[in-house]
Amino acid sequence: MTYAKILGTGSYLPAKTLSNDDLAKIVDTSDEWITTRTGIKNRHIAADDEKCSDLAATAARRALEAAGVEAAEIDLIIVATSTPDMLFPATATIVQKKLGIAGCPAFDVQAVCAGFMYAITTANAYIKSGLAKKALVIGADVFSRIMDWTDRSTCVLFGDGAGAVVLGASEEPGILHSKLQADGNYRHLLQTPGQIANGEITGVPFLQMDGPGVFKFAVKALAKVAEEVIAEAGMTPEQIDWLVPHQANYRILESTAKHLKLSMDKVVLTVQEHGNTSAASIPLALDSGVRSGSIKRGHTLLLEGIGGGFAWGAVLVKY
Image 1 (tube, rainbow, N blue to C red):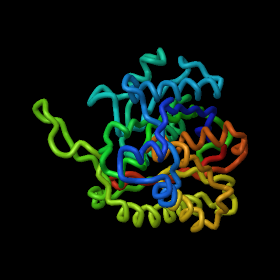
Image 2: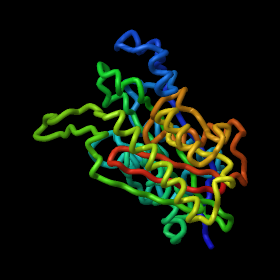
Image 3: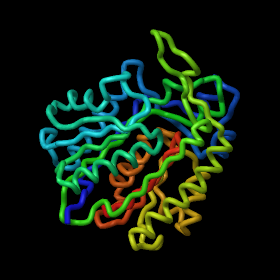
Image 4: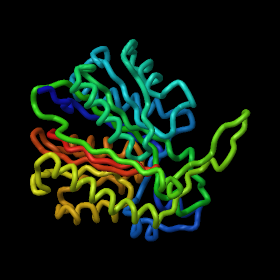
């Protein structure tokens, strides 16, 4: 049987940081208000000349280096993003050019904060079916560019970043099971409804969120999908070495861990350092856990996240 195994991880955070104290100078908030409600202390902001593809390409290069894989060996590139460089072509094709690769399939997926779950599940299907041997899966977003910096309920939550993994065909277990779900009935709770029409922006071009509504849905949906993906794989929560969740809000992460009866010592936490980086947050957390030495070969990981749509999912991985 062919599995898709993670060969290497990489990530990138822009140099500029925006602390809670910095935010308090431009919007009515405070470090105490943000920290107690979200666990966030800092977020990174892309430079004016940094595009989503720049963040993605840097994370990709670091993942390739960690995997010991040359860019020319990659035969599939998937980028999960909600903030592409442009309407088209896909940011994945721009990353492809920046990495000096040509010919292989390259496309974007858009499932907001659940984008990396959708992307890695798609790459897994390609590899298991024999359509690809080595895939580059990237989550990258520059949410700072769709923030209303006068809205303290949203601007304190998000930051920019990118994370990547290299997947390779292997006879050893890798991605064990995944489960993706979506429900467009809840799209109004988290959206950026603006569009470009006739050369002008129509609608609201900023992220809009019903915080309490998102929190209520996310807590239930994440606990349920995590429980289901573990059970469908014939495993139990006790067999999970690390929960690697979407880094949106400490309280949501705590609730998911509690539901699975996992100690917070088994949860990779990076939200305090970069806030919610949407599709980038899970691979960023994964890379942090790997490079810190916490996540080791042979560990069983549960990746899970939820984003606008709503779209959500979980992926069980033998690292």
